[in-house]
Length: 340
Image (cartoon, rainbow, N blue to C red; front, side, top):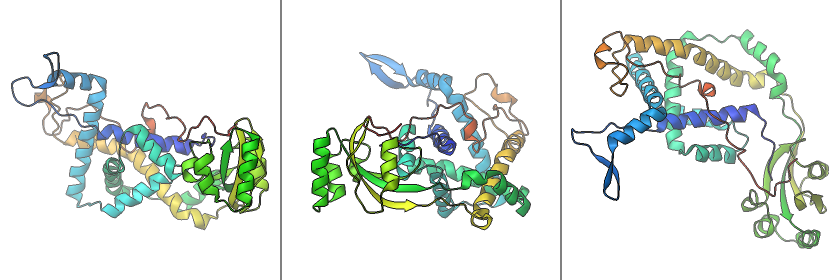
């Protein structure tokens, strides 16, 4: 069963992961004077130089510029005596995961981007390093936090939610038979794995996790929110088939206090200010460095001297949301889902 994914935070979070994948791609120039083969087709060589030229023409310059940015950041951190620990990266990863509705959504975003958690951690390490470099320039006051809280309180509220599992089948007769078995003691998760046609949830015992009102089919939602925790529904018909629902938790709507959100808001404001400062800071540091981009044929290597950067300023690694990427499909999709 799918949920509506209009949540802007999820989209932004996906972009973080998608852009992180871009920086993970490595570009290697050919070595030696003789042309090396990347592949052969019926004896005809496709040279590594040709491959490299194609990569550079397809976004390789941007990727190399980002790698240069990352190296500038690394060197500046070393000068400042800044270190990033594994715990720092793990905390950043946990913060990134919070931007996704579920762990599965996070993992599917990784899969869609073609990267691993370890690769993402490498990118997050650069982001943490940049934040540590710039934090001394940042001042977040209690007044700033209060203003952010007041302006964003609605988005911080948690609506009423239920956590439910379901079994979906094609006919009413089969659903009634399954309901009878469940009432006689059959295990819900086991039956879901064996008989549910919802491929997105059956392997998890039909678990839909938490959802609020307006996220599911109207008939399904009405039944789920009316059920006491731990009880089974009658057979519920939707346009996707026949469902049996079991509610496992029910949360009432909540409004967090300023004290409850203070640390989270401070972290958000620090990240925003880092993003604002990072582009000018990085361009300044690059202008002070000796950077020679041997793969940028439009810029002669001899023009890169001390205090001159021979690269085109790259997008700041802390501002992925500005990249020209296309939001990925919903993290969960099933033709049998009971969505509106």
